Image (cartoon, rainbow, N blue to C red; front, side, top):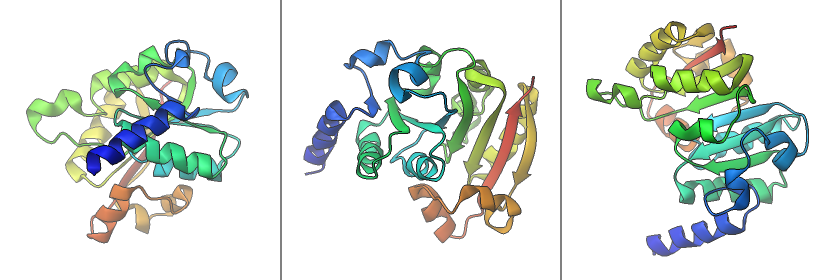
Length: 220
């Protein structure tokens, strides 16, 4: 039954115009052309990395119709849920890109992106996993390449050691930390999150975990 549901979602992705994945012509031509070839406007582009089911991507798109949002994940069955939610809500400012995050440079041109959100990534806690953390130097360099001058990078995580690691790695790799909190829901910064929660955020919060958040900016 689970396999059948997964295959059904893969078929949904094939038919969905808001899913960019291997096998579709736009998959190989979209780099540098998101505004002209997909969104058909000049609005800012915001990415969510590791978007999962797309709760945050869709929620932000509903709240900010004058921005374009792209959820990125390698899991096609998860993307399908976000894609269908966006379609059901009639959102035209949403897209989903199926790829590994390490290949972002193949889909976005230099300084094409205005903001990046990293929401509850795998913290890769062991020392030998450091290079896989989404705030490791190689990833931060990749984000810098596609972010516009002074572009924003947001991070939300329940994992305190990963958050502390990121607080150090960002300034070391070309970013200025603008704001940070180790308890988002007790902070004035919570206002900018509009009550939107991912599946994992709701789960962690219900279990009593504090939510860490930071907002940083690409150093000019």
